[in-house]
Length: 436
Ligand SMILES: Cc1cc2nc3c(=O)[nH]c(=O)nc-3n(C[C@H](O)[C@H](O)[C@H](O)COP(=O)(O)OP(=O)(O)OC[C@H]3O[C@@H](n4cnc5c(N)ncnc54)[C@H](O)[C@@H]3O)c2cc1C
Image (tube, rainbow, N blue to C red; front, side):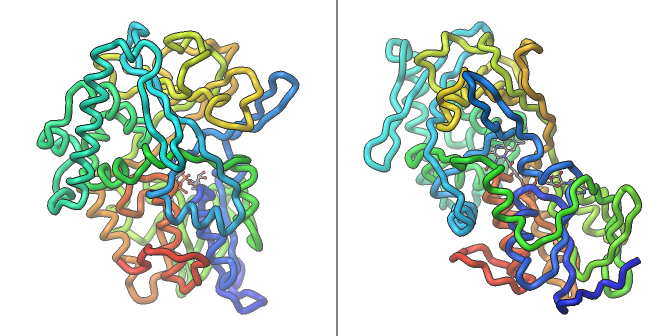
């Protein structure tokens, strides 16, 4: 057992988990603490699933998942990336929607007018009255959502209730809105409907469609080392237990090695955090109220999943079978990611419903992801209240810990809040309150 004291007189702090929440927490806290970062996987979490893709004599790294973001919603993420020097690029994420027979329901593209991205129908959708109906319903939905977003009482409604009350067009909801939000939140249509309406409207009206989608130009291998500075990194170190021990917290790995820390930031997902806590009963119960869903992602080059030959198609292909619980969504990475544009077509397919030829598959990864309900939101507020208790030493951080859709921004928001509680100076202007 170690003493817990640091030769430089800095408090010892453990960060458990190296998704973007843990990485950004470690980065923000490193100046005033001696930081040890634990990760259960062999590589830091953001890059744990990346794979190499070789074609046309070029080898490129593909991130799984591909992480997109935009202005208007990702203030802390963009400020962090700017601060650590991550280069970002705009990316085309226009889409084509087809049904279980491969029939195209809607195909749209984007073009840029100055800094604004405008959508237009593509291909045969120009001649398809159903596509025009969906386009019209979409315009009505967004116009109404922009008026409603600051309306009081929205947080008491589920998104499903809002859609019903606002009279959103049925074809647009079933063909476009639910599939888009099911991939954005990587969850079922039902879970999308269960989200609090204000969180969905905040995202949908942030300008994501007008301001364009962005990605990190060089992928996560360029991002992770920029945040793992002046910290001790322990990979292959799943944590089994975090419990109070006198004035400190005892952290035990699954292999049985024990260390003591003055502060512990758990930046794993809610169910993973609950599994490692002992002696924090109230928090364990609250964490148990955060729902999550499992889904998988395949990286492959099987073009059979497309409704038409690859040439001329928009980069994002939504396969929307009637009666499915989720869409199957494939992104043509050679169209969405500039550094892959010279290679042979390769896809990232979320929730593969159809068979992908095994000899065409590079990787398949299983994920869990939190979702938000009106009840889970109350649990998160109660968990954040625990951060304000005098003498608190256990901090929960992660995309589930803010009142937002659990995306990259929510994860960075949560680490900014924890760093603020622990007295760290945030090196950019932020509206994120460190107190509840
Ligand atoms: C398929 C998919 C696509 C997505 N696409 C986007 C997107 O385009 N844009 C966007 O903004 N967001 C996207 N997201 C969401 C985004 O990935 C999450 O918001 C983000 O990863 C959350 O970060 P986090 O640090 O809170 O948690 P995580 O990334 O889940 O990190 C938790 C870390 O903790 C580690 N861990 C768990 N248990 C232990 C343990 N016992 N001991 C040690 N370590 C442990 C895990 O290995 C992991 O590295 C996507 C999510 C998925 C699943």
